[in-house]
Image 1 (tube, rainbow, N blue to C red):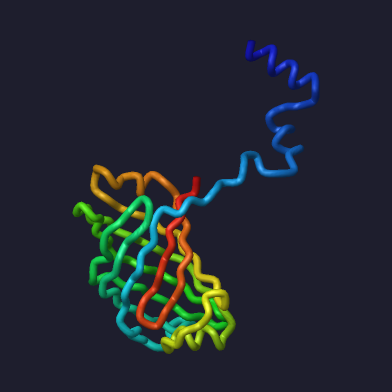
Image 2: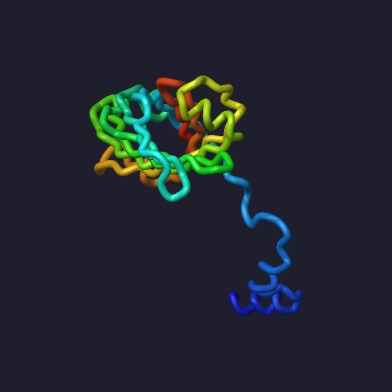
Amino acid sequence: MRKTIIAAAAAAGMTSAGAAQDQTGPAAPRPELEWAFSVRVEVDPAIEQGEIDGGVSRFIPITGGEVYGPRLTGTVLPGGGDWQVIRKGGLSDIEARYFLKAEYGTVIEVHNPGVRVADEATIEKLRIGEPVPQDSYYFRTQPRFRVADGTHQWLERQVFVARGVRFPDRVIIDFYSVE
């Protein structure tokens, strides 16, 4: 049967390599995003190191917060942080690490790298803690989770993307699973 299908495909000029070369669009349907949960992360003022390797290095301490949404509720534990490098041209590298505690006690490690991009004036306002409209910057992350075996292992078994909104004393991050 397999030889018959391969022979028919070859006769029609369709080999597996040829089929891939002839394709002009995606091989599969576009993934959908599904809102899983959000976190409201409370932060202390940034600790700035100054300019290092071409960017302003800073650390923003995480002091707590809340987790809410259809798939996860709980709290943001104090003690994590967001390491940032603000580069020329409006690009900020984001590297956040912190812990969530689910409603029934599971502790979830979050590693959330990403980027924030805006014009220089908006970046400066964000840097000094002034409010800015959320549509004046691009703030996206690629979160990864580590969790003990059990109810919340689904966090390790899916790909997520997130969108952040920065306020002077907090950050709201909406987490979406890629379906």
